[in-house]
Length: 221
Image (cartoon, rainbow, N blue to C red; front, side):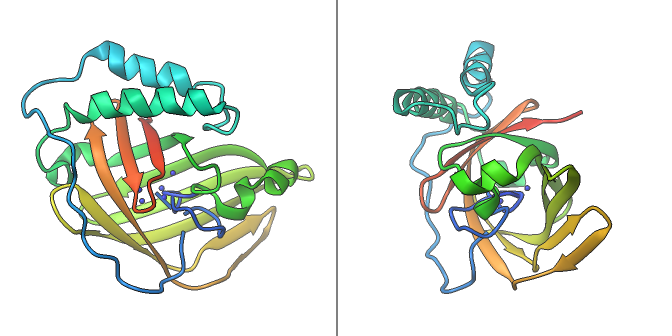
């Protein structure tokens, strides 16, 4: 997918809650205070290509981070921290955030996808892809596609993006929609996530959820 904001989780409603798709899903409970970023951006300086390639190589083939050991997660976090130093000023205002993104990593497996990404959920639901689409001016669509007992299914979320400050966004999602085969229905209610955009370029986007989950998004197309 909640980038947190996609389905998963973020995305994708991508958050650390158990419902599906939480940069992306958590029931509305209270308003969280706006948080300022701690990384210093280097405006006009492009991140070295080797850093981008490094973080993508570290998450490749890990089932979006599920298969990584603890030290592997730390290596991803270290590269993300270095990339954050090259973050453009006010990334929330950049057109680079728009487009179709694949969730290729999350430091907390259940943040994107909720129950579908728990150990039991992964035994039943085989995740095919986790996508977050950010459309101008303020629409976010998260989708987790899966296979279950030979049937294709998906959980989708649509939300409205609100800018909180120069790096933080909030997404208010409508109730998720579940489709399996020819059956489909909505369940649950509204939810919201908050995500800090710590880096974005033409290829990748990095985000950190309000509970500290790290997300790596890869641009599609």
